[in-house]
Structure formats: structure tokens, C-alpha cells
Length: 149
Image (cartoon, rainbow, N blue to C red; front, side, top):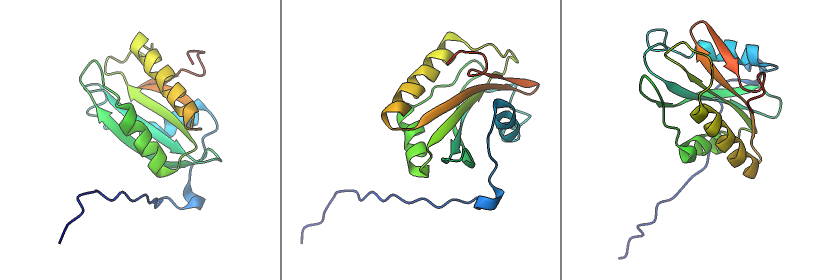
């Protein structure tokens, strides 16, 4: 008897937030307010983290995914993993975010480059990148609001 060594891939989506409790994102401020609570206050000034806010057609939050953690000065974003999460959640748009342990809100050249890369990849998949927020414990920087998009 011959066995098949091919992996079976299943796609499923099961939202954990009921529709009536979903938060609608209308601007960068309420995106930040939704995100800041997901950061550990003991780590936000120590280690960079990269998160994805997954949104439906109505800009309601389907979920927030902690994609990866980095070092004190950077984080490597795996585009394949980022879009695997987005596609599996059936999100139609996203907001990406990362923190700067230094407390500085100015985006680096690599921050701007990864934003452009995510935006281009999303366009190919009909997934809109709405913003990239840089978060600190004291505030945030929106790339859209500051024309870095």
C-alpha cells in the first residue's frame, strides 16, 4: 500500500470578535488607541515589535496580529508571513505598526522602504495598506498623516 506524502492545506477563518463589538478605524488616532493596549509597557522601550491591524471592508478591526519581535534597534519583517496572516484572515485592508524603543517618532529609511514594499505587495493582492504607525509609550507617528506614504 502506497502512502501519499503530500501535505494537505486547509483554509479556514473563524473570527473571535463578534461584529457588534468590532472597533471601526476612522483615523490614525483611533488606530493608535486600539494598538497601544497591545504593547507590553515593560518591553515597548526595550525591544521592537511589528504588528498588523487586520480590517474588513468597513474598516472594522478583525484582529491585531503580533507578527514579529526584533532587537533594541530593529525588526525584520517577513513579507510571506505578513501576507499569509492577512490572507488567512480575509482582511481587505491593513494598518501596520511597530514601536521605536528609543522613543523617537521619526521614521528611518528602512521604515519608509518596508512601508513602500508592503504597499506594493498589497496592491497585487487587492489588500490596501491604510497606514504605518510608529508607536512609543508617549505617542505615535502616522506615515499617512505626515505624507511618507
